[in-house]
Length: 216
Image 1 (tube, rainbow, N blue to C red):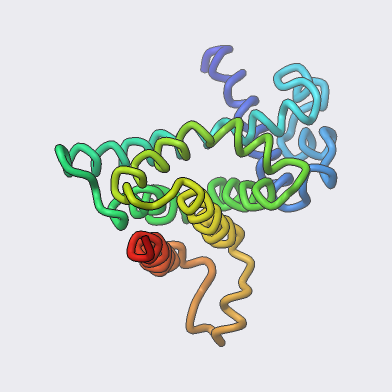
Image 2 (cartoon, rainbow, N blue to C red):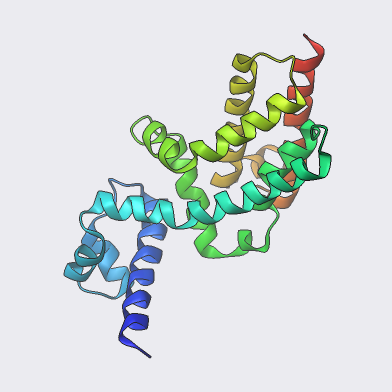
């Protein structure tokens, strides 16, 4: 094993530990020392690789955000290309947004579960949500809004952005996997069944956007 490989393994261990702890306890409930302890490294090494806690938090978010964005963008570009020279349907656009993150095999991996919980935490935080979600996800989201404009040319932008706001809330709650729907439904629905959640959310959100079109 080369020195660079060992160095990368240490970095990954720190990121994994930070991801799990931030998802479980939030930003303020975690110290660099706790992260270093879980990663099995000295706190000075964590600080060397990532700097202060805030920079490490950003690095955790960026690591998987880049992967999610590439999956979603590829799925969206595929449905746009398939529909050319026309526009993709609303359902195709919505599916391309949800399916890459809720139906892939990674949803069963602990690291991804922690990351999704962390995204839910960030997206619902007045302190973090605006800045961090803008930084990591806005370019992709604007591309989806552009696609929705193609499919729904008569719908005002204000409606599209509020529609996206509702879409984002549904996805965030799915990411959180709180178990709330399990109790409400007496086990009929499971919050950890993200594939099932995807199908219901896609149908619901598609119907909402389609209703906006019919109302014009």
